[in-house]
Length: 308
Image 1: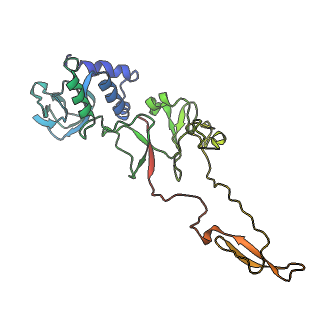
Image 2 (image 1 turned 60 degrees about the vertical axis):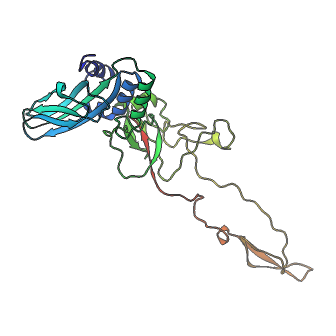
């Protein structure tokens, strides 16, 4: 396959009528997965480089498994021009010459030279899961994961595009691959927008799907307009406590009362018995930790959802 032919031919077909650089970067993981799954590319990476002055035969590491065979420049700014000296590319470095100061964004790919053998497929899978790979962190679109940082993953580091699960509205047009899969707007939205799940202070629960574990599955509600109800992905359920019942018979002055029960006063003499009833109250805080909610031991995280 001739250098430059595949990326230049396929990217415009996959994208919209014009190549949108921001779209490519937001959906980089999906494009990489697509090319790899189609066995067209062994590896596919994104680069941004800035040059402050003219220079020849600059060596820049490419980090690919084999020598890059295809290059697509998506954006260049500045007065300088860039030449990729592909004949000087080797197993480790690209060779680049620039005529002046400029900033460039581009994509490179390495192909299968023939139908992959079993050993080549194994090598491909091993590299795809490596820390160096441009397609690492292969969570599927729509995956929701707990996340321990205050900033979203960088969409250009090969892990995909993620949003906070904070119930905010986003435009379908900005995340077209997710929008294509999220047509039912499970977490709410409208004809042109979708909401992410609203996980703040909440935990996810598996859909009951007829298992009978969630007795109130069919009573679940939509948290936002347009969202799912009933036993479906995206529906919401308020907190609740299993009902606690009990009873107390007539308790004389010497009756035993303990645990969450306590005497709060005397009700008066019992007719014809010369003894007294006592007033009794129930308070779980006497024997357990209590709050205004029912909860388990926990630690805080943020949830994120993959949308590109």
